[in-house]
Picture 1 (spheres, rainbow, N blue to C red):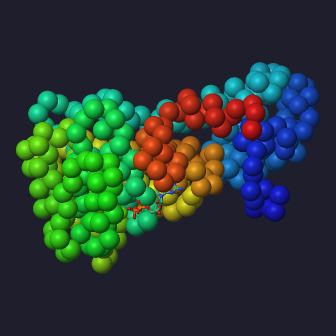
Picture 2: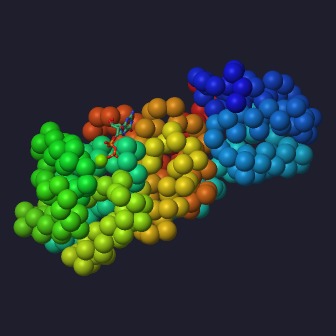
Length: 313
Ligand SMILES: Nc1nc2c(ncn2[C@@H]2O[C@H](COP(=O)(O)OP(=O)(O)O)[C@@H](O)[C@H]2O)c(=O)[nH]1
Ligand SMILES: [Mg+2]
């Protein structure tokens, strides 16, 4: 990473144009010159698209340019956008899903499981999702199935009070699966539409954690057919390659339905989403963009591409 690139303030497209396409006329002559390609690669890598996607994108652009399909900046943006859209479309969220914001079926609550390592933003995301689902009219129950850290219970309880949702927790050291069980039972009794199960991010060992999560998952599935409705892996959007490692690890034990990229407001780069989807074949469902309950954006590939390729910064 070079000094001039460390803190890009301009949008991705602006950087592509300013940095890689200093002379757009080279495009009109039927190709991108070598120097422009190198600069383009640099911009894309710096934006966290990763090597594979960067090379694919550049090749696609070269091919389009050499057959004369790129005569203007707009053509170049369209070509780039089409390739990126293809990559993002490869991982589709489950039909209906949370995006529909209505519980899966009459009677049983929609159970959502949130997993991820410590500190990434799980508990905050649980609160944000609760606020969102509540705004959709459903009664929400927050379940603190992290009984490992005492603070975890209090943190979620505080959110439940603030948002005025139902809450079920457990005593320190209690079996998290039994908290999950109690939570679903309480939700049924109170006719809650949604149960959001927050979990531990760290146990004595990673194996212990995975075993615990699988057990919670199984308990939920026994109580409500098809539950959990979604298994969302929360990751810190700024942590680069670690995101892939975490997703592989959790994905090996749990059938993840989507990713939440929390802390997207804190210097996450334009390419992160694309490289994550491409590497993991798990759709990005939400972006966390701050610490308040409303700071959760539903992820839409179209909107995302519009934003990162907007002509203005
Ligand atoms: N800026 C920002 N901070 C966040 C976001 N999500 C969570 N945080 C903060 O990250 C820290 C850890 O979050 P927490 O939900 O406790 O993580 P957990 O350990 O995975 O449950 C807290 O200080 C949160 O306020 C986000 O989308 N943006
Ligand atoms: Mg937590």
